[in-house]
Amino acid sequence: MEWGNVILQGVLVGGLYALFATGLSLIFGVMRLVNIAHGDLIVLAAYVALVCITQTSLNPLLAIFIVAPLMALAGYFLQRLVFNRTLGPDLLPPLLVSFGLSVIIQNGLLQVFSADSRKLSAGAIETATVQVVDGLSIGVLPLLMFATAVAIIAALQFMFYSMPLGRALRATSDDPEVARLMGYDNKHLFGIAMAISLAVVAVAGIFLAVRSNFDPALGPSRLIYGFEAVIIGGLGNLWGTLAGGVILGVAQAIGAKIDPGWQLLAGHLVFLAVLAFRPEGLFPKVDG
Amino acid sequence: MADETLLEIENLNAFYGTFQALFGLALSVRAGETLTVIGANSAGKSTLMKSIIGLVQTRGAAIRFRSENIVALETQAIVRKGIALVPEGRRLFRSLSVEENLQAGGQMQRKGPWSLAGIYGLFPVLQERRRQPATSLSGGQQQMVAIGRALMTNPDLLLIDELSLGLAPIVIKDIYAALPRVTAQGTSAIIVEQDTTQALAVADRVYCLRGGRVTLEGTPSSLSRDAISSAYFGV
Image (cartoon, rainbow over all chains, first blue to last red; front, side, top):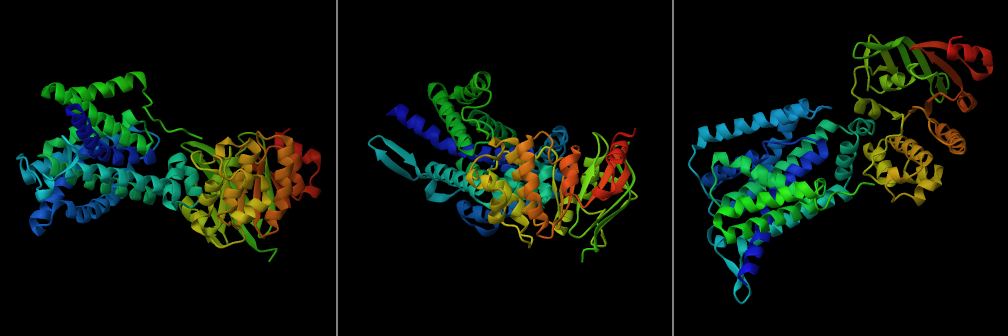
């Protein structure tokens, strides 16, 4: 039962990793933009939540409903004012700009909030557990995290494949020039995609901040978890991204169980193995 | 009504970087008219299409659509004014089904005669395949989707770039047979072709392009085969 517990915890943490990865995957899928600042935006969202909570003394989990719209709005304008100017046939300019944004966010947070680590307190829910069977109980918070990840991915999947907005995003992703021939305004659509991405980032940031300590330098490692989940799961497949997050989470949990120092290493090794033996990911998108 | 000028182009110079593809080109389309533009490879036909719809840089040109200069507008704004382009090579959205491709064309909800039902009436084979990925269709059926997708924007002027290129002769006949039903709705059309026979049969007027300039213009009946081939090949 001890191992069952370890694996279950890994699965649930995988939900958080999937949340890290979803926004990243979405942006890459729609506009071929590798957003290096993604991890820092997650941390930024955590700090926005921190400010919001100290001002209103809201529960962090409820603050999601304020922070997510704020981040979405910021995402729309970030795309319209910055990233849209860099997109083109060359993948490098947007990559470099996002790298610059990453540096700016990290140092901006350091300046305003100092390097002290912070944590958001969600109250009693943090320690609440449900007993599954004798000797195996799961935390309510990790369960909520996982359920949220599943719900968000299901909603995005529905949006992409059953709504006009999703059709527009897929069309623009396939051929931006022909999308304009349909009357689509690509710049606006890219703005919407970034808004959705940062709304998911806000949710991920708040869960991150409730689950553990955070500080301004935490972004890049979250970016790596997100990347690894996307690559393990296969590009362009959101359910695959969830699976990728779960595999990463389980690998880390097993590594940590063997030796606490192996937690991160085990995750990276699984990622490397996938990259070496199935570079297209475990669940690649099947085209046409 | 028939004499009303729908599109008027003056002094069109188009460039790819420093390379000039069109030289002071002039052209006009009357409402309800079907025009064909013929010419060999690299005569500037596709560039002309892309210039009208705003996908190519132009210099000094006036392109008036219903007397309004649209030269400075972005492509999506021009499309909203009522011009649609069926691009060379069809370029269907590959992750979308046949029906979704058509719906993408209809997303502006511009008023006009065309709807999904209308497109399926025009090309019945598409209805049977509407759930299939668009790129799983044959070349001819893909061209039908591409034309249907453009019609779904309910254009007043339909541009078709290289209608028959790479298609089987029997399919080309089918598509040309459907064209009069499109123009019967009052839609004007400019059809770009390398193959002149089919193109001349549906055209009210013909333009021949060579080296980025108009070398011949007239009604098909007024143009002799010799005049056309000399304008086409420059011999």
